[in-house]
Length: 182
Image (cartoon, rainbow, N blue to C red):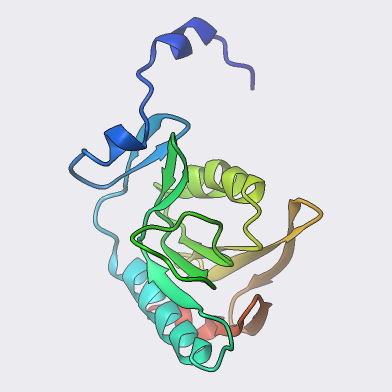
């Protein structure tokens, strides 16, 4: 879609990480525009995140690389873009904030976050060369798994109740059947 009002964009405030670091509350900064985070996640969202942490944490202890799982940690992509993925796997030491692409990014999608997760963040994660992007939909008990191939995300699988092996620096197997809050 072509922007019908390009002059309006020129008048919008433009923010940087310096501004972002002074704000109170939960936000993300995308191309200089602040986005408020969705209000406190529902129990299904929290259950999915907790289960993912549990499954991944158990498996990365045996990994020969320095791999860590983080939830809701800022990723400073650039001076005007700071994202806060729901959960990431990184295979390098992190000092304070993430400053290079994670190995795996999980976003737990809700009705209110769908457009940002499926389009805006999808495009940023692809451009930043995140090897694996996984969209998890607790309301419909489904996950969409994307792998970066030749600079673009390719959908590898839709998972509901099966196990899926993610071949990152540390291989992790996710049992999707255990993610769905009853």
